[in-house]
Length: 476
Ligand code: UD1
Ligand code: CA
Image 1 (cartoon, rainbow, N blue to C red):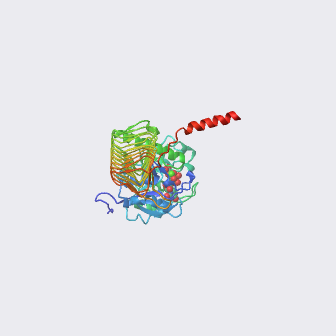
Image 2 (cartoon, rainbow, N blue to C red):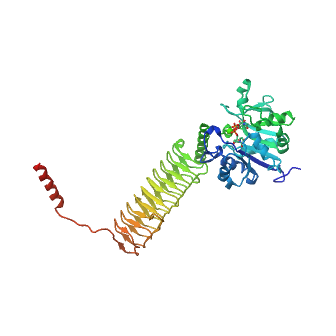
């Protein structure tokens, strides 16, 4: 009797190979942590796998920089298997034998091929079960098959595979084959582990190739079949920086198409950088050269101006973000407006109908409903109430060199231009701060704080100065 996750299907594990160093990237970082579409290669593969089986049945095989890889993706809830020494893709499976002992069906994915979808993994699984195969390999026909293992079918048009031959081991006649190995397979547990010890290292790289299982199983009279995917892009692997760039581009264009399908206008989509997890509401307009990154969510009827870079922010409906804003880890509520050239550092909340203008920087600051900080202002660690006007050039001195202090500006306050607010400080409801005041003491509600030096006027001073100068010049 098959061990089952549900009553009908065989108990299935998905194993993701992610132990390699990625020599061809010439990087100090492990290959599977290189990013496409704004997140690590491996995170994309895990996301697809976890739609097919529960995360607890997904196992990542890690080795090179194992702890870094583990901590980058462990929130996904998948299991990890350590491949201490990386002796090839076949060796990675040998190491996993014990961890997989309770499963009937083992689906193998490669952690450097992030375009794979849950739908295709399911097709691979269903084809494997329908054909009652020992091993099924997903293949694709690539115009340029360079670098990939090639599929040798028993005869043209047949489902059956005789062997998978690595690029470096191709015979001249096999150079013409355009059908490539994706690195995604389904194996019967018994078929795989019953024969895996027959793998050897007699090849150009001296590694245990998982691909050799095709020939080994065929020789053992077990069935090996191939299913060709329609979307050849899904098999692309990122071994080099150029391949990563191609995958990244493909992923981002697909993301733009998805958003456009959902009702978003994107002007010159090829200039925009939109990460895979970003969400945008209908009738929002994204101008050219915008970056929407991380977990950013944008509402409906909003406009995002050119050259704005938005990292993991929540932007509401009908918001206007003008040209050149940099917004990080902040919330912008409905009908607020920002920019041009505003900067929200992490921890800000710009409430409904509030305005943040040019060259204004906010950090850990809440700007209440309908309040404005329109020009050349810095507000840090500040609570601003509703309908407050912060004049041009106002700054909070929130840092005394040792610790940060809070500024509280209550509802309806008017802060005159060029004021300096030395925190900790509170400006009471409805108060006025005269322009150019240095506020060092709390201001009671409804009062006026005036803290600048009294003006002195010396009549005729400039004229006299000019005359003296002219006289001195003549005397020379
Ligand atoms: C592999 C396939 C090739 C296929 C291509 C598809 C083999 C021998 N070749 O080649 O047929 O066309 O993928 O992209 O399988 N890894 C480990 N442990 C190891 C070695 C590798 O976990 O000991 C991992 C790597 O981190 C990587 C994946 O396995 O995520 C594939 O390894 P890689 O070296 O990239 O194989 P390719 O040369 O691309
Ligand atoms: Ca690869």
